[in-house]
Structures are given as structure tokens and as C-alpha cells.
Amino acid sequence: MEIRPLLMCFALCVVYATSKPTEKKERVHHDAPLSSREHDDAQGFDYDHDAFLGQKEAKSFDELSPEESKRRLGVIVEKIDGDSDGFVTEVELKAWIKKAQKKYIYENVDRQWKDFDVNNDGMISWEEYRNVTYGTYLDDPEPDDGYNYQHMMARDERRFKMADQNGDQIANKEEFTAFLHPEEYDHMKDIVVLETMEDIDKNGDGFIDLNEYIGDMYNHEDEMEEPDWVATEREQFSEFRDKNKDGKMDREETMDWILPSDYDHAEAEAKHLVYESDSNKDGKLSKEEILNKYDLFVGSQATDFGEALVRHDEF
Image (cartoon, rainbow, N blue to C red; front, side, top):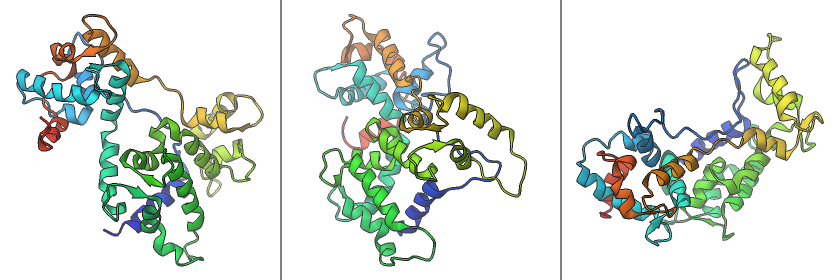
């Protein structure tokens, strides 16, 4: 597969993309809801199934008997118990729910992995990523397409180093996922903010003023009348984005804008599952407690995840 044109197109779309004159560009990252269903346990546990397994997987949980459902849930419980102490804590359950909700991200990384892991050692070095992504472009120091690939490579290297938590210039699967999807990881938030500010801050003063803020969202062409949402965004900037009222957004204000502290649905669901299942009220769940409430977690349904476990001989 020829990956470089595809990746460069993606990178250029992210860094340099412009929207249609009346189309609003979205910079804000919100966590997706855990389920499209209403959370009402009195009516059923569909919401909890979606949250625990991911919506896509929960849909295929219909064919298993309660016995088989419990057996597979038992395997999942062992995977959730990260420290193998025989209990599932609220923290471990929250981490599992977040991972289940990000399965589509991991699938995306898996699709790209083999293209970058050139030596098939199960890791991706910065050198491998750089050569696959930029190799041919760097042979021409002055490409005629108007893009500065040296600059783009420097940005990627900076992000790679941030994702590479042990500093060995080699990314494992989780580190590479953080590199490709930094908005999903707390330790990558600073790089998301920095890259956003670099994209929008046209005068290079280290801040985002009102004109830069609007200019990033809206392209004013042919003197056409501004859509109503542009006026609304001007008000949003003045009233809410620019918290200290100095006419511009600094790093902290930009982070509050693009990475808002939303309600943590995964944490709330983890608390709910523990509360409903913790029969001895010790604040953590044993495998037995979870299996006793199996219908809350998975009901009598089977998942793609469970099928994947079967394929890997983990049952």
C-alpha cells in the first residue's frame, strides 16, 4: 500500500484545512456519549451494556445463553482487573469503559500499524514513521506544491516525542495511538493546544485574538453576508472564551475552549455499576459479584469482543 500520499493528504487536511464560506469549522473535542439509549434501569440495562461493551459490540450480544454470557463475562472481568488482585475497582472499571468506547480508534491504529512497522518488530520507531511518511518529499527541498514538509515533520516529531512516554524514540501500540489521536489522552493535551494555537495564531504573538479566532472558523469570500453563527461566535469569544477580558486567548483559555472539562460519563457509569453490584459494600467488585449481576453488564448477549477472545484462544 502506498501510504505516503494518503497520510500527507490527511495531515494537510488537519493542519491547513479551510471550510466553505458559510460552514463552521469545529475545533472543540467532546467525549462521545456512551450510548444513544436513555439510562433508565427500570426499563432495562441497554444503556449499561452499550457503556460496558461499546455500542457496536453490544448489538451482537443477542444469541448467547445466560450461561455462556456469564462465562465470557468472567474472561472480561479478568482483563479488567489490571493488577490481578482478584477485584475490579472503580478506577479499573472506568478505564475499561473508556477503552471500550475507543475501540474504533484502536481499529484505525491497527489498520495503519503494518504500514509503519517496517521491520515487523511490533514497535514503530520515529525513524520508521519519518521515512514512510516523509521520505520521498524530503528528497526535494523545495517542493512545488507550496507545503513545508520540513515544518510538518518537525511538528510530527515533537508530537511523537510527547507520546513516547519512556523517551526511547520507539512507540508501542498505546504510544502510537496517543500520537495519532492525541485528543484522547490527558498527557497529550498540551500538544493539542500548542498545535491548535500555532494553526490559528497568524501574527505569531503566542495568543489567539478575535480576528484569528473568527478567521479560523469562517472564510469571508466575495463580500457575502456573514451567517448568524459568526456573530454568535464573536459574542462567545468576548463573553466566555476570553476569560480575563484582554482581547485574546492564552494557552489556558485555549485549552478550556478546545478541551472542555465535560461531564465524565465513563466515571459516572463506573460508579453506577459498582454501586449496583457491590453486595458487601467494600467499594470494589469481586468476580462473583459481577457475575451475580451479569445482566447489568452484558445480559444474555454476545459481543464482537467476546468472539475476538474466542479466536485468540483466551476462553
